Image 1 (cartoon, rainbow, N blue to C red):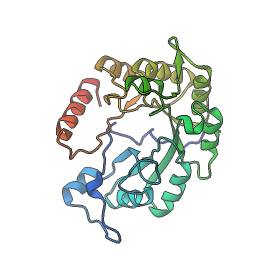
Image 2: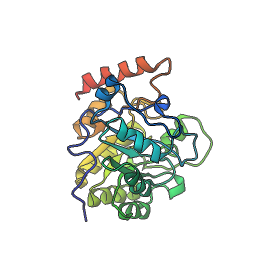
Image 3: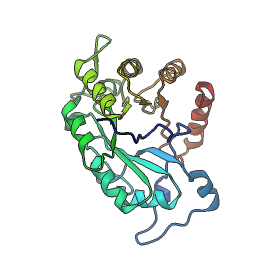
Image 4: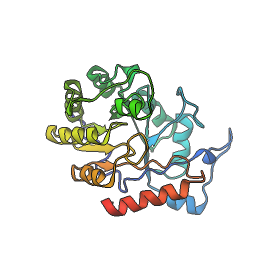
Length: 262
């Protein structure tokens, strides 16, 4: 049965991810009082792309601490993302650590969960609390990711000869049935558009193109405009904005947002 509370409807207003950054992490036992500029910038913001421990990658903070930090900085909500483990249960626990903060989880359909696995999606939707709301199509294990990076390892396809695989269509049906969010993962631009059109056909109400300007995806402006016409949000993941190319990256995001429309 579809749940009335959604992640994106009436929730995300700008379509750009605001990242806290490693530099924002307080020392153990230390409380964080945001500066006035930071408080104004983050008040009411929603970050739909939050990575934290436990993870198989090095992370600067765990999900309980990032939840408490997000609440302290005035964010309205976060979505916990992990490439290889479902995060609905983590969202349930993190809500206890940061009461009042809207926290959601999801599942990325990479190889550890069986790839395009409808059973895994169904289970994620049924985890206690019903805070698992986002289904990312394959990310690091996506066929497009593996081939574009010239990696020699198994991958998870979503289409063949320009046609979505039956299991992908089944997963999109589950997303529609449970009122979840479809995120396109590291799929090729053409594959992402195929999935958005199928999702719209099946009645999915909430769709996100996962960081379309990232090198793993590489959507051009015309493709981003096409995705927006299908009703999808475009996610711009800032990564570490203190890196030397950080300001230029944000400028390029702003330029595209102006072209596509916020």
